[in-house]
Each structure stands twice: as structure tokens, then as C-alpha cells.
Length: 143
Image: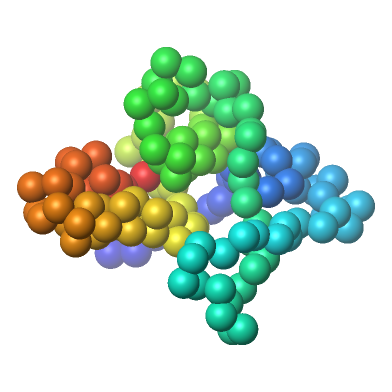
């Protein structure tokens, strides 16, 4: 069974900042969104990308209480904050209208860092050296 989907709110987070107004301002002012990276050792060949759009140093405390954020991974913080932005923009409060509400998350390499950490631990010290936190966060739908 399928039903019509209506987008009523959006939450955006990126290297331009947090919120649709930050995105609108960055696009309107042609703000450069890519920054140069120092590639990790062994990944610095001629065909290696050295540019990325990094979302760092953002204040997400308006959407996630700092105590809760301390226990969350970076991708999970971004996903929860963006979802709360979208819910707020849609005008949905805590009034229990969640049965017909869905959240769509788009990420390009969200858990890649955790997957790499987990695999490095396994290769370096065996399966027992991998932490449960890295395992939980290594799947694409973790946030």
C-alpha cells in the first residue's frame, strides 16, 4: 500500500552551518563550501580527492541537549539535529502526531570512520579488540 508523501519541513546541516537559513545564505552569497584536506598516509596518490565539505564546530545545542550529545556519535548528532529542525519547521510539536511521520536521512560516508576504526582494531588485535560502540555505529542506518 502506498500513500502520498508531503514534505512539510526540512532540516539541513553542512559545512555552511545548521538550518535552512544558513544554507540559503551560503548559496546566495556563493560561499565556497569545500576545504582542502591532508590525506591520510598511504591515501595520497594522484587520483585522491583532497577536498571535502566538512560540518565541524557546529553548535547543535538548540536541537540536542549537551548531556545527550556527549553520548552520541557525530553522524547521529547531525541526524537527530536535522530531524528536529525538520519537525520544528513542519510545525509538529510533541503532540503525538508521529504515526504518519517519516524522516529521510541522506549521508555520503556517514559511518565510514567507525567502520575503519573497527576494522583497524580487528586487524591489529583480533575480534575481541573491537569496541561495541564502533560496531553499533558502523552500519549505514545507525543514526
